[in-house]
Image (cartoon, rainbow, N blue to C red; front, top):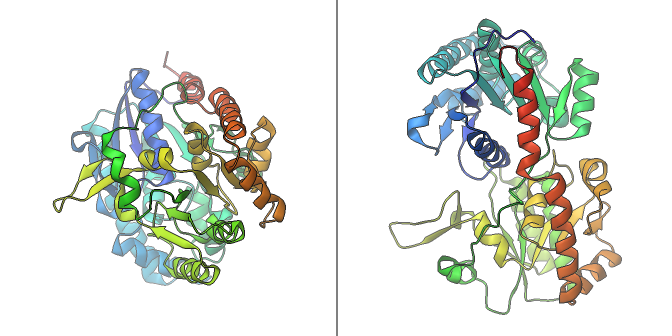
Length: 425
């Protein structure tokens, strides 16, 4: 791989946003932690960011919800005929973004870049093209970390910009090493694009305990509106249709315990609210109480001007009694790994990636196959009613995940990829 690179010291991460608790931002943070522990300095480029200002460059047009980008999305999909003005608008913003990438590159004296999901799923067409041209022109050593692909989403199937998608989502360039988060994505990328990839699963810091049972969280359950004897079922995902939240609602309905409350930690900001309305109506029909309070969950703890506490997702897990993860599809499974880290029992819908990459490792979970059965209901009852079994199960799961999904896994993979760039190490 000819990259003509000096020894790598400064690494630039590029994405549409580094903000909040979405899966890409969370996983990027883990990579940053590992790289900084390895001695590298990390910097960030995005359309939105709440990360360190002195290490970050924000270009608003890089965000997928920027008004101009949303307009481009509306014109790009659901039609096969491209309006003339669409191409002009894409190239206009692409040029601005490419110039910004050069500024980012030079300002922080970058030796390598890592693309976080901006070169695989076409949420921002101009950004994807800008990244591709920037890499082609500089030959910079690049790791493209792919979480989602266009072929995994029905809404991208009908479009008038397939030439751009084939060019940039993902790009085929000699200085890029590709990373997928599961084996099926690697297979599909090879089959569809002729590109090879390294699999790096979602991870957690299993070798270090996060001690969050402190005075700050003493009011968490009350702030969520839970009573002392309520049973806290956590749905630690965004409210989008593929998360299968209706299955969690059905499970609680069939458990026939009015003290069980489902807490949803995130809201959906990028796929509308029709699914949210649906699950609210369904929960009312099933007489299940939903607690939807994303306003109480942030990236860091803080107290607002009016005295309201903001908690992190890591504050919620220790307080939960059970985790619901009935997703229809996942690229890998951040919530699964997190629940295992916090030693919580979990319901998992056996989505394809879980069956292929996670289940064979031997985890002991409550598993469903597309729908809630009486067997699933009884398994949850037995687990929650048997503290010894629950402890044995969660400890077993923790030890398996510690072996396969720890930070050391990322460190080993990144070390190998960095060594693959000529002139390094």
